[in-house]
Image (tube, rainbow, N blue to C red; front, side):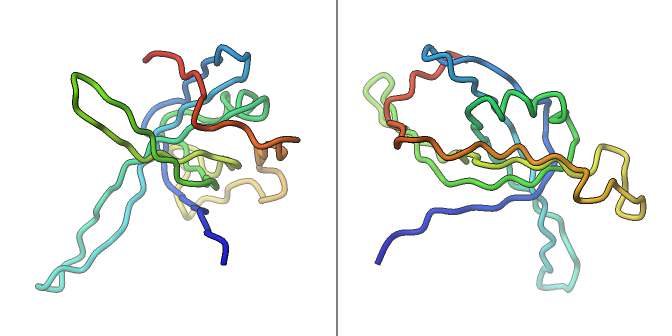
Length: 145
């Protein structure tokens, strides 16, 4: 049985996308996504809980998407979970990120559910093609923040 690592998230960008370039020349777009969920408490009241996710999106298609990926924009992200591990001052740390394979911009800030967004066919999907070889994800030279 093979393992499955696939995630779909729909939420709003907490800031505009940040474009950097790796030492290999590969474009890297960093996204921060807020995803809301309504939960009913014991008293029957609905409360909104927000989770925040960091996403890395690589390649030429990622860099083309940057103008559409502005703060507050609703997006659909498809990708996989990636655990980063590092040590600092003798302590081990880890963080889980989303490695995006597709990013689809949806509604812009101010477009409510009642407004009519552009048809799905006219909304761009920035879908990076599969690489010819499996990249060495564990040895990517990330730029310093």
